[in-house]
Image (cartoon, rainbow, N blue to C red; front, side, top):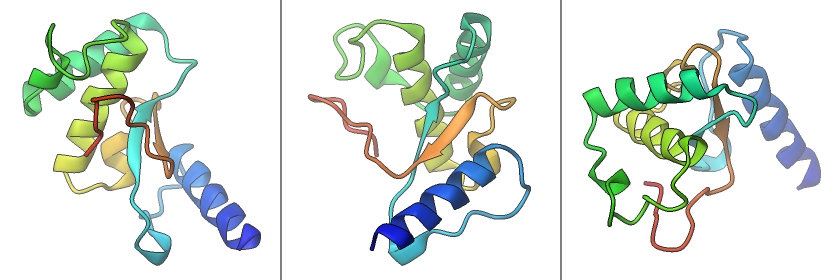
Length: 115
């Protein structure tokens, strides 16, 4: 089991850092797209603007379930995941100029449910 988990993590990290190979989901495991913590604020803001021009980001509005914490990394992660989920869940749908990361741990919190 640990070997399979390590292999999956290695695969996803390899894909996130540009191998160019299509994403293979092991055992039907769900994936999400989040912002890399090292991303700068200008990139995060550009990601939010782009993703939200393509998908409905109402859940990020004040009073919405994903508004808090009110910071760019959180908002970018939610917006990037909405885009990723609605555009086929391919690794390139989470690239965002190398500022996105495909993860296998559900990033949902409180009432903010990542689909």
